[in-house]
Amino acid sequence: MDKRTGRVKTRHIILAVMCLMYFISYIDRVNIAVAGPFIRQEMGLTTVQLGLVFSAFAYPYAAMQIFGGWLADRFGPKLVLTVLSLIWGAATLATGFAGSIATLVALRFILGVGEGGAFPTATRAFTYWMPVSERGFAQGITHSFARLGGAITPPVVLAIVVAFGWREAFIVLGVVSLAWTMLYMKVFTNTPEQHRRVTPEETAEIGYRSGDCERAKRAATPWRKLVRRMWLVTFVDFCYGWLLWVYLTWMPSYLRESQGFDLKQLALFTSLPLLAGVIGDTLGGVVSDKLYKMTGRLRFARVSVMVVGLGGSLAFLLPMTMVTDPMVAVLLLSASFFFLEITNPVLWTLPLDIAGKYAGTAGGMMNTGFGLAGMISPVAFGYLIETTGSYNVPFAISAALLGVGVIAALFIDTSKTVEKDEEAAALRAASLSGGDATPVWAAVGPQRHPLRRPLRWRR
Image (cartoon, rainbow, N blue to C red; front, top):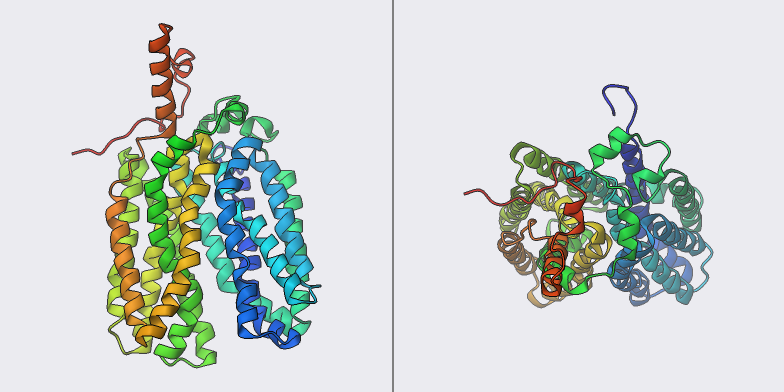
């Protein structure tokens, strides 16, 4: 809110709309798990067939990460996210009318296409709407709404199923998704200069330069530069995603089979770690932005939070494999997930910091690590449980990956950006051609936001 006028800033309205999108999309993503037993009973599905329905989402979701982000860079996030949300909303709605396993698999596949490009596109949307000093908070609060959506899905979906049926649950959620699309089309614009409500003062706060978006659309995607600057972030995201997928898929089984919780207790104690993650997501982004404002050191603000998040999650995960008290196990799980989610907003902020106008493609590259972890982690975790007869070995391997992620995060450098790579290439080209070596951005004067400057570690 603008303290001088009491007027809510336009970028915060857009942020609220994006939070709603993350919340709704996550409910649409995990609702099938809650409705699964009812679908299986009505259609007479085997566990293998139901597993096929569950997994149909993951593959197009992973495949759409980079492609969806690239589309947002090329055509703008408004058009792309509108189309994607229409796809996943229609798929959710149509699931309520599915009559066979083939239809269910096809609709879950289509849902994966729609949601696969959504988060990278949303990241691209923040490029021209959120100043550097607020990007961590923006990514943190949106992803906390995603975790909140996952946490409330069981009671919401079960309430609709009990009152009306599983089909009605999908129909209601599909209508809600399509209603969000209408809201997004009305509120969002690709840039501040396109929005009638934005003041010149807010544009200056954001640090947007007139015409940036159109110039970015025309620019060729620097794939090699993006891969060089983002591969390490993708690897850290894989280490983070490995344990997150364990929480999303195996935590109820662990609490029931290893810790002995009954079904009534399971509903409560499965939600506690997820709710801890909601707090962690918001806190991670806020702390990172605060560190940046206090120190002016962007690399320190991002890397330190990632190291604390991954390291803290590791510190609480290891003793969990040795405890016998079920309540202590839940508390350790919650603490580990809290620290794990501190990492998440920073990971999603790095594509903005490093790739700038190519943040959609870069965000897709980064989240591909999460998608690959989703393909491997649940299967590997289950295989190790079956082979060893215990949850301790797969949890220990997950902890080891967190340790590797901590080490890798130390080498991420936000001062080495794709923009600087392009400027250096332009200088070299001008030097070789004998022309003026002064880049265009320098000729028009210093127009960046004052916080957007090269930053280095201090000794």
